[in-house]
Length: 339
Ligand code: ADP
Figure 1 (tube, rainbow, N blue to C red):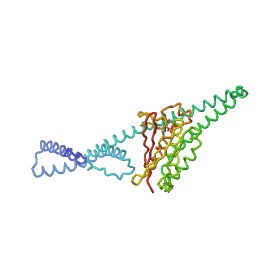
Figure 2: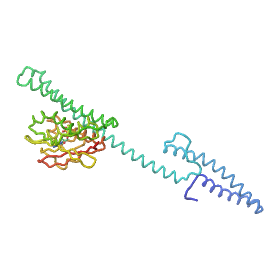
Figure 3: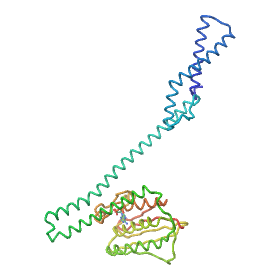
Figure 4: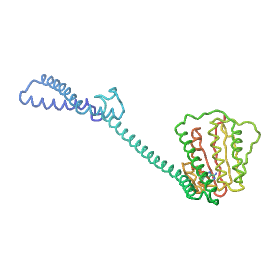
């Protein structure tokens, strides 16, 4: 009886007690026959039950009903909560709702913390080149423009910082695009061998300026068809290769390999550059994370390249992995499904 308490059960219990008390009082003042006693008792129980049910519904049930609607997010009266619904069930629902709400609140709190940090990072990243540009231009306007020792070099430095600003804004734009347009990727078959050749061609000059040799084992030149968004995978390979040049050693080599593994092709970018200490590896793909802040900044890095790589591969349901030995070099690898 007390297990699954419902409004009807409470109304009935109260009606029984009230009827028993009423019968006791009546029989004290006017003792009556046993047959009548049963009849009166039944009539009292029914009347008290109806009255109790009405009072309980008006005072408690309707309020519980409101809570029930609120936690279920229901907008209509069409609910499976009535006088026969166990209050234990309501109790469980309220407990579940409270648990879920608590989870949602903590998710929202960590999102808001993340957003604050993100905005803080962006403004910090933008401030650095903006202040540099301001400094160079002020010096030039205050007379430096006539000083042949600095005028051209200060203009070049200002321009370099403008390029950096452009890089950061472009990378932020890419991330924003990836986050808001997850469905916009176009998965189609393309030749990964051809794409790698193309990116290597684009970076030939940058690599030779940094005295890095780009080595690519083309093998036979038959196409290796994979499934993916070619434009975005182009960016993945580009970002990995440019990093291997930026963080490479003079006279070093970057190699691009690929291995067929079951239904996938694994692409590897292997360099013999400065390498990365193990403690940094877990954070490498976080936005704005840099192992060596000043080196990255001086090379025009936004700190977003690897986080873009991770994002793009996630939209392909793939991941990026890295292994590295400080001083000896790093290997970044990812897989794509064969077409
Ligand atoms: P950045 O714009 O700074 O290059 P990334 O997100 O591309 O930003 O890379 C994050 C950090 O990871 C870099 O600042 C660098 O310290 C490290 N890193 C990335 N690629 C390599 C690599 N091939 N060798 C050594 N360090 C690397």
